Every structure is written in structure tokens, then in C-alpha cells.
Amino acid sequence: MQVRSIGLGGVVELVPAKYGDERGYFSETYNKTRLSEHGIDLDFVQDNQSYSARRGVLRGLHYQLEPRAQDKLVRVLKGSIFDVAVDIRRGSPTFGEWVGLELSEGKWNQLLIPKGFAHGFVTLEDHTIVAYKVTDCYSPEHDRGIRFDDPDIGISWPIEADALQLSAKDGTATSLADAEVFE
Ligand SMILES: Cc1cn([C@H]2C[C@H](O)[C@@H](COP(=O)(O)OP(=O)(O)O[C@H]3O[C@@H](C)C(=O)[C@@H](O)[C@H]3O)O2)c(=O)[nH]c1=O
Image 1 (tube, helix red, strand yellow):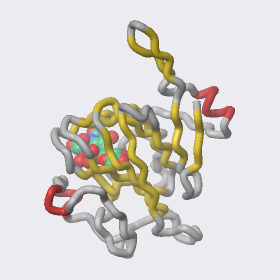
Image 2: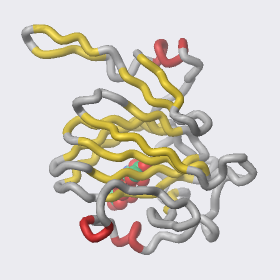
Image 3: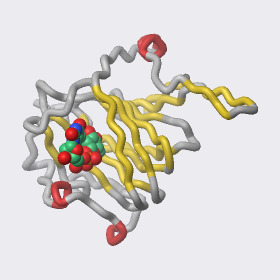
Image 4: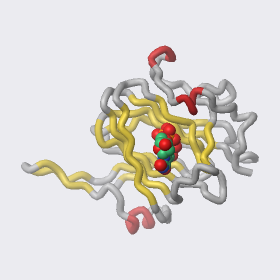
């Protein structure tokens, strides 16, 4: 497994080993002990999967507040996404900064997004399936969203604005300035 920091505290790209043979391939997509060897000690308690029918589906920016905050380990089963993490820890020297990375079935990479970050992605292909593990269960009372196009964050989404498809909830999300964040 390759592990690489991508420049914002604790956001890490992981690439599990993949063993191909004449039948196809085998890969450990999650191994708690191997992650511990890299100083990543997390207890995942829920697995999520979403299917997006077309390119341009944008989900986010989402997070759960304390005490139900979630670390997320995101990967793509089919297709590709541009995956984004935003530091929303008030007082952090990188508060409001974002990082983005393409995740795809072909790259076989994963993104670890720690608590304290908002998460969102846009699909780069039709029929994209995303799977991710989280360290706390869904809690609608703690679930929050921030606008994907907040100018104070300034994410460069790689899909033109008129091709995006958002949920009603994400379309009316608040700005970072008005959001409840991590204190
Ligand atoms: C997130 C979630 C949603 N749901 C339900 C609520 C709702 O009826 C339906 C769809 O929910 P949403 O519109 O919030 O789904 P979605 O927009 O895909 O939300 C996800 O977006 C990405 C970016 C994340 O980081 C995830 O944590 C999650 O927030 O699924 C659960 O039952 N459990 C869950 O863990």
C-alpha cells in the first residue's frame, strides 16, 4: 500500500496493492493493521455506496458535527470523481483551504478525509459508483452542508457550472462564513 500526504493536514491518498493474474485481480481495499503501520488508527463503523447516473453529479460539501464527526475513506468502484476536502477547523492555519484529487477505478486510489474537514465530489463520468467507510454512523441532527461554490473557499471544480446536478439540499446550502464548523 502506498500512502501519500496531499498537502492539507491529515488528508492522505492511499493506493492499495493490486495483484493481477489471468483470472483478474485481488486487492485488500482496507486492512486496519496496514493502516496502523502508517499511523492511521481508525475504527470504521459504516460503509456507504452511492451511484450517480451521469457526469457532473456534485455531492457536497458535507460533514457531521461533533460529537458525531466522521473520518471518511473514499474510493471509486466504477468511473471516476474529483474528490475534495476542505479544512473547516476554526483556528487551523489552513482554515477554508481545500485539496482535490481524481479518484478512479483505474487509479485504484483512495482518499482519507479526517474529522474537521468537509467533503464533496463531482462525477467525471456517467454511471459512477463511490464507496466509502466512515467512523461514526449517520446522524441527521449532526449532518451539515456548505455551498460547493462558496467564493471564500474557491474550489476549482473540473466540470462546467451548467453541467452540474445537485440535490435540492446542496443547492440551498449555507456559506462557510455562516456554517457551524469545528471549534
Ligand atoms: C449520508 C447518509 C444519507 N442517508 C440517507 C438520507 C437521504 O434520505 C439519502 C440521501 O442522502 P444525501 O442526499 O445526504 O446523500 P449524499 O448527498 O450522497 O451525501 C453524502 O455526500 C458525500 C459527499 C459525503 O461525504 C457523505 O458523507 C454524504 O454526506 O440517504 C442515510 O440513510 N445514511 C447516510 O449515512
